[in-house]
Every structure is written in C-alpha cells, then in structure tokens.
Length: 453
Ligand SMILES: Cc1ncc(COP(=O)(O)O)c(C=O)c1O
Image (cartoon, rainbow, N blue to C red; front, side):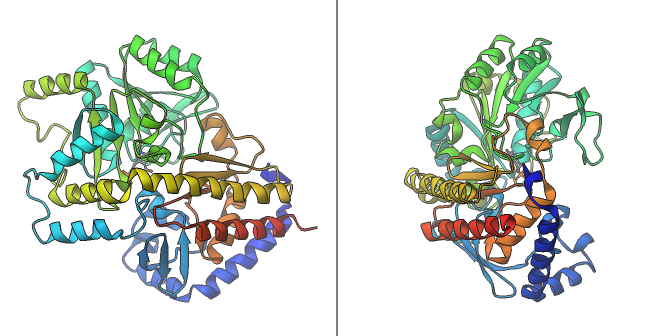
C-alpha cells in the first residue's frame, strides 16, 4: 500500500519537486497569474487546477505524441487530452480534412455525405446498425438515457459506483458507507440522484440482479471496464451475466466506449463480443474536434423512431444541439476513422501499452514496491496496492492523493505528462518505443528515490 512509503521522505522529495517545477516554468507561472484577472482560478475550467504542480503548464503547441510549453520545454504526452488527443496531436490527415471542410462551411443544420460514410464505418467497428451524431460523450450519454426512458416508459437508470460518464446528472452518484447519494463534490444536483438512478458495485452480480428486479430501470449505462477511478477490469463471465440479466428484466444495455476504445478499433464491444442495445462514444472520434456518436440496434432504432414520430417536435425535447452533426465534426470523424485510428494503428498502440506496463512492472519489482499495473489495450495504469481493485468502491478507497501528486510531478519535471486524477498512460499512433522507455526510466528513478535507505 501507499502507507508503506516513508511520508517524511515523500514530503521532502515533493518540496524539492515543487521548487524545481517553479524554477523550470516561469512563463507558465506568469500566465497563470495573468489568467486570474478574468478566469476564476486562472484557468479556463476549474478541473485544470488539479494538475500536480502549483499551476498547470501552458501549452505553446502539440504535434504527434509531444507538446511544447510556453517555457520551451518539450514533453512526451501520455495524457493525450485524457483520450481527446488519442489520435496524437494534429494528425496530418485529420488536419487536412478539417482545413478543407472549414473552407467549405462548418455548420449548416443540414446533413453532409460524410455522415453516411461515418455511420457505415461505425457499424463495421461496433456492430450496431443505426447512428446519430452529437458533440460530446456527455451529450451522447444524456441522449441515450432520454431515449431509453422514453421508449421503455421506465423512470430510472443504473450505473456503477464511482463510474464517470461526463457531467450527466443521473450518473453523479456513489455509495458511501453503504448508502447511495450524490457523489461527494456533486455540484448543485437538480434532485437527489437516488430519485433517478440505482447504483451498484461493478462485478457484483447479486446487487445488479436485485436492482434490476424492481423492473423500473430503463437502461444500464456501463463502461465495459471502469476507467475513471483507475482501470477496473470485469471478472470473467461478468459481461455475459450482465447481458442476460438486462434482457431478462427488459432493461437496455448502453455501453460507453469513450475510454474503452483503447481496447481496439471497435472498443471492448468488438474485442470482447459484447452485445449492447445502445453504444456511446466521444472524445477521440474526430482527432479532438468536438464530436460524439450514439449507436442503436435495429429494435431500439425502430422504437425510437416510432416514439419521435409520436411527439409534436423533435428539436426542443431534450435531444438536440444546434451544432450536433455539423459538417466539420463529420469530416474530422471520417478522416480520423479512415486514416488515423485504423486497425493497424491499434495493433502498434496496444503493443506499446504492453511495453509501458512491462517497464513499470520491472521497476516495481526491482524496488520491491507493493504496487501493481493494470492495462486495457493501449491504456495502462499503476496502482499503489499489490492486487488491482475489483470495483469502484475499493478503487476509491485506495486513493493516495499525496503519493499520486508526487509521482505525477516527478514525471512532469522530467518531461512526461501523465493523465491527472489517476496514474494512467495512453498510447497514440504517434507514440514511439523511445517515448515509452523514457517513462520507464523516469518511473524507475522515482521508485529508487522513494525507497532509498
Ligand atoms: C467513459 C466516459 N464517458 C463520457 C465521458 C464524458 O466525455 P466529455 O467530457 O467529452 O463529454 C467521459 C469523460 O471522461 C468518460 O470517461
């Protein structure tokens, strides 16, 4: 456990790293101070204060798997916009398609031919035949939840403890001390989410069965593996049982592939042979241009169409967005799927994910740290415990903020960016073996300093 780390040593090392960060990043520090004049907390969004340093590095430019900050320092980017940049930054095929489409019109409220190509490609990858397009994975999840409630006539959804599906009111719920309620930090919930949502632990089939037995759950919204409280993999057989139980109780299964696309070109759905009724995905679909999609089985599409035909309008009913399905997003999605996040690219990226995990594991063993590594395709993560957790509650209880801040800042000061909020690394088509090995060396150095006697 993290508790085996000498806390006095950790504090000394952290103070040293904080001083080093400030000395190395004067221009970012200046911009941060200037930013405070007009941006609360000096940054465009509140979560941008959660990086390990006293302030975030401000970016000058990013190319492939690297970016340069305003102080002229170049980094290996293993955060990759926490999956929004999984394509690598500014991939040339996408940039060309984006520039071309931008010159021909960005948003029209009318469809373009690209939408038809992308719909067919989404079916090839994920199996579901019908698709709709919007701008964020949050919206894709909100819209599928609305559709599922509308066509089943059921009021509730079900999610996993410590899931994350974006800023979707129904999903910001956890179980604390055995009691479900608004997740700690839930900002201004419209209602107590227990009114809209049932929440169970991942990998707990009994709890799932009990919750579904009420027969008031329109859909289960599930990541195939939890990825937002660290990577928590499903037990063998879990997904088969989840599918069986949802069918038995007339509940739709929505699979959120926004992060689990790291498992392969068709996400975990294709890699593990899942059979969702609906599927959502956002973030990397258009190389970072806002774009998201939700897919439906033929049965759901038919019921959804019948429902939509029965209501007076479809534009003000809660599924919409003026910019949804715009020409630019669709052109960028097409280029991304056709030329960047290809089947061949995934082969390389997944091998790099394995190399990253091996590098970390070797250092953990060499320094006899009771830590472990978990991986899903081209996404991998280290845990400060000997066995990876099996559910969100266990994962949340393992949080060691002090230690995680140190390991992140240590890497950042040595020009490697990890995903904030957990100890995650993601590989892009532009990531190289050298990038991965650079992290392994820095991780080994960090482990050596932390355990030195
Ligand atoms: C699994 C999953 N779904 C949905 C989202 C929401 O994505 P966005 O913030 O782009 O709407 C996230 C964001 O981290 C996510 O991890």
